[in-house]
View (tube, rainbow, N blue to C red):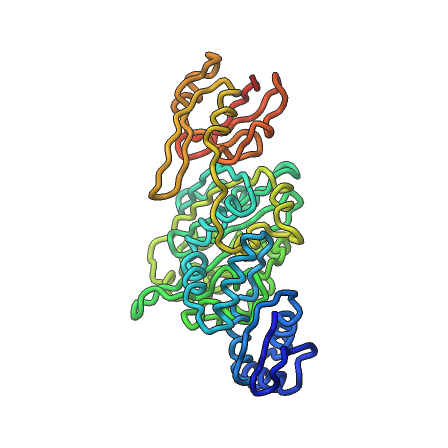
Length: 415
């Protein structure tokens, strides 16, 4: 990238950044000026030929600080790189409205964060995700709560994602690996009666070490900045998680005003300790734990070059790109090779493709799968499966279908 400062020289900047530029950055960014200097120097050396011209060093420093607010996003796909380049151009020229709107809409609300993590894993990185169980816990039904929150995938070929909804007060995701590693992914939106909903922090800020919250000034980090290094920032929380579960249990059993270890329980949770809204709820809350299984983590990591640890964190640091095209004819052939017929429908309003079984040509399992919506074939979601993904003729493959909102499975022989 070519950066020109007219007050300095007619030539493009080179590294190291000249002293006047470093001084302007230190004046604008007093907290971590070297990070901003490094960001500018990385732009200078990014290998592209795009030209940006600034009248003064202060103008360059202000543009760099705008860019820093989105610098935590981790584009790993070509399509993501294209989106990030557009966002960077907006930051360097002063227009960040589109990027901030996308970020706030997708990642500042806790419920939207939970939904969009799974959506991005599927659309960007080819994840096959099954919704396999739902458990509701209340003050009068606590049996199994510890087990639901502490479960671990039985083998290395799966990752569990626990979507936890604490009665509308907060949604958060716990990503669980078979070796016991766990990650907390969340955004948070306070309920302020005087001004309506306001962002507290976004998921990209939470899972990163970014200096700036992208939704600023509609954010409040005062009581969570000290929580992020341990509970966010893509940190493995396995060592802390055992302390979190009994605090959640106390809140479910006794309400948001419950105490744990002699102190109020809600402020001990790594969500938003100073939010007073939950404390105004008089009844003990319901905790709903939805269990999702990521069936193909190795393929997902392969689509995330350089990423390890939390796949959900990378989803929150991803860029919005179109979902893969659905090859209906190819998918119908796959379904036919499973001895099935299916009707295809597309809901343009929500962008949903459905393949609903209309006949079982083998006569087997007729009552089980006919009239059910297909979800996956083996480790491939139905919308992206290809004939090359099937095992050889005569071998058995697991097929997932929807029943009562959850995934159920049946084995089919490839024809």
